[in-house]
Image 1 (cartoon, rainbow, N blue to C red):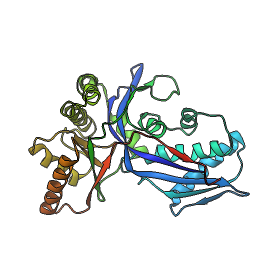
Image 2 (image 1 turned 180 degrees about the vertical axis):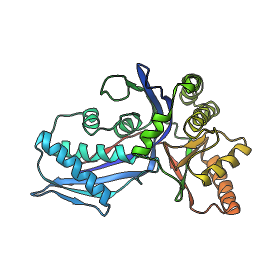
Image 3 (image 1 turned 30 degrees about the vertical axis):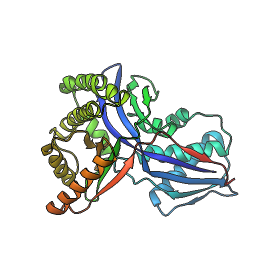
Length: 319
């Protein structure tokens, strides 16, 4: 059987004060164009087929964990297509869930996706990746309950308006943050940002949610911008700064043009820009490409993507 699992962009955290009964909370969107494609079949021995050493190691770790707890059968796992790692597209959670889900299905284990996520230690802060895997769309979670091992609680999952379009900005030279460095970033956050966390929630309910539910792009884009500015100030001590210098230059260009609805996905360096329709996206993309050439922002690539209202896709024709 073969599984396709999509990428996501993480649009910001709502609450980072871990002294509260519930903390984190986040907003995110499943996107097209990038996915894992992994095939699994029965085998006499474990055979992991991939040219990516880090994914081979991770696959082995996941298999051995399932083997120890569930005594699963050996199998052949062929990793045919990948989501780029550590660029802000949620590859870690998607890959773990993809491998775990396939092993579970092949061995007829009666365990849910949520149980697989907890078993593989995913969804510790944000629930966006798990929800993108399960159903796609635009997701809001309201964080983890303190003192539990539960996944972040999903508040809403909303169909993404298909007229609204997205530009992703990739920077080959951009800094990415993960692992221990990511954990340290969260430790640096303290209660002095209390007003910003409160503002995030008011922005969610007064701008973002009404915007997407009523298809009011202006309201939605303004709300995303406010949360992104807050996240930038909290993590980078500057409301107009993100991890990629080149993408920062492009964002300054957008600010000068009074455009809203852009920011950084997760820890970056990937950036995103929301556009009201295809025509406006094409116009803006052409304008940015000229700016990139003018300013010699080498290494920046622009990709047109759409919001995806479906999660994983399983085919069984390969059994």
